[in-house]
Amino acid sequence: MNAPHYSDLWQGIARAVPDRPAVITADETLSWGRLHAESAALAQHLSEVSGLRVRDAAATLLYNRPEYLAFTWACLAIGVAPVAINYRYRAHEVRALLQDSDSRVLVVPSSLGAVAAEAAAGLDVELIVVDDDDTAVPGATRYADIVVAGGDMPRQAPRGADLRLYTGGTTGAPKAVVWDLDTLLIARRQSTWGLIGVTPPETLEDAVAIAIDEDRPRVVILPLSPMLHGTAQSATMATLALGGTVVLHARARMDVGEAYRLIREHGVTRLVVAGDVLALPLAEAAERGGGLPTVDSIVSSGMRFSDEVKRRLHTLGDLAIVDMFASSEGGPYAFGITRSADDLPARLALTPDAVLLDEDHREITLEEGALGLVAYRGILPRGYYGDPEKTASTFREIRGRRYVIPGDWARARGDGTIDLLGRLSAVVNTGGEKVFPAEVEQVLLEHPAVDDAVVFGLPDARFGEAVSAMVAPAPGTDIDVAALLDFVGERLAGYKKPRHVFVRPSLGRSATGKIELARVKADAVAELAGAR
Image (cartoon, rainbow, N blue to C red; front, side):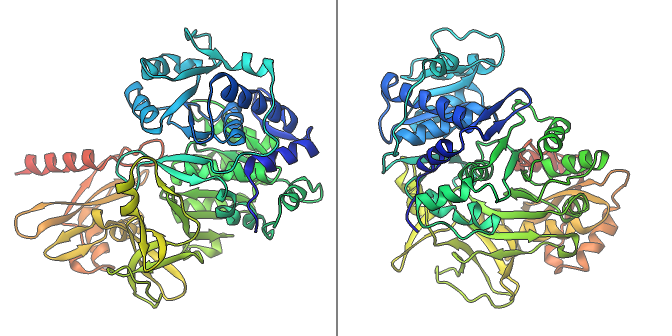
């Protein structure tokens, strides 16, 4: 396959079907022609007024708004690296990423103008403000004025540009993964054309023809998770590459009821969620409403997505659930795909470019019980922006081949599927035995009284570390700790059974499903100290 560029493909679609809806919110519909015009005006401003050149960077502090998509297209069209910063960040966090990414422009809603102004104070950063309330941001350029002025974008995007996707998962601190835009669509070919059962096109012209084919069912996507995250970003860009329509909730805070209304009103066919955090309230809303009759696929990655919630979703429509194991640094490593409740429990199947490596970083055969590090050897990013040391530790050149090794261990099941065990850094070393928290968490979650669980190690004078768990009860139930431990002991080796169990009403997961493990451990230590 040649390397069609996102911007070139989107331009071909916009020229061919300018009146087709590209972006829909509760307040407006942007046709492909209008999205192209706004992106072109912004591209011209960034190049001629802001003075940005190929491989410079510009950032957004936007939630899921149409301007996010126009900004991304504008950057790609002129070879500027788009950088999405989490709109929940405080000023000092935003400032750190502006400096780390060398961004010279920040696009921000007026409601976050004060945060942006504080973050950019003293930096050579132009603020471009999207009006979402009446807040004035002194010295900023209004997005609306740029759009009214109009402009053009290059018919062919420059080569050699990149996209910088921030992640904290593998590195432990936010770092930008640098993806080569010349090959990004090839890297995402499976999640673009593969998910609709189409052979990836060989030329730009073929890609445009697929996208504008009126006889092909159109993808209509609603990303419930923020587009600044890799899965939602990739899925949304894929939808546009297929000539589809993006439906946006377009609010800073998620209202699942409103999102469900948009799903039904606009015939959404694909949803992006963040595991149970969004999938569970979606299932509840759909159960109260009329199900999910138009949805044919739900995509999630990187978050716990339980079989119970998947089962509920499968009863609400004829849909496939794609639970991906992927990272900003590469992949997808594995897919857990279920097409009905009969396919549960979901199993992760390694993708063709994913392998397991032993401790000497040699590929191993996937015989039953084989334990190895998950690695990926397909098209990979250049590395981390401005951090050659972290790049070298994550992207390994091994016997003439380049791999990304995020640090997750897995056990082969002997049929091409794996059980994901987690990071070695999270392993609990108890009396010389290694316990992978994910393995114990899975068993805890199988107990009907347990709604959520996290497993970790606590210091132990005799064993070094003691396997410990914090659990939250299912609604309307109480957890009998002794019975729960018996349940675990019947399914796992004795050394894997938690020695300490802490029961809490909730584990306090963030909006993206994360648990602050340091807080959990401190809470557990305090309870143990009080019991002595």
